[in-house]
Amino acid sequence: MGYYSSVYIAVPSSTYDEIMNEASKKIYAEENEKHCRYVRFLDTAKVFTVEDDKVKIMYWDDVRWYCSYEEVKLINSTMRKGLFAFLRIGEDHTTEYDCRCMDDDDVYHPEFDMPFNVEIKVKWNDDLLLR
Image (cartoon, rainbow, N blue to C red; front, side):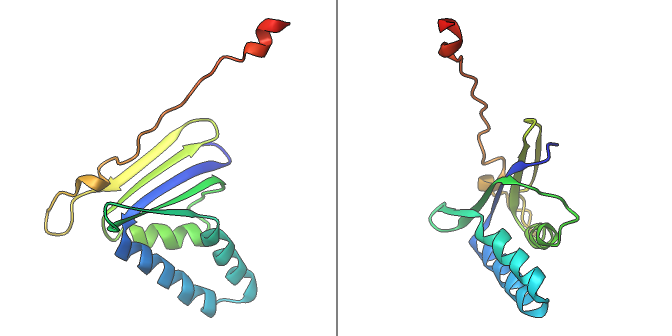
């Protein structure tokens, strides 16, 4: 996986709220340096609401996403308690995908079964022909 990645996470809106609440608790419990890290990390996510407000998609571009980072641990541990879809695309175009689309009652939720359409676009540079 590349050094920097694009990361997409889809979770139920209630799970997104839980992630934000957990982050808030950690922000106020930790010293100032970690406070700034959590705020910067969560604030850099673009958040979209889909499926009639039932699903939130968090998106980071050019982010260092390592499981050893406290911010990533918090998001991973919270989202993996319930329904989620996770997609990470490295700068070398390798991908990592994981999801949980069955709830605790074995009900299938198709909105979390690979909701992302991955497409890599290659375009010819016409400027090279003019030389």
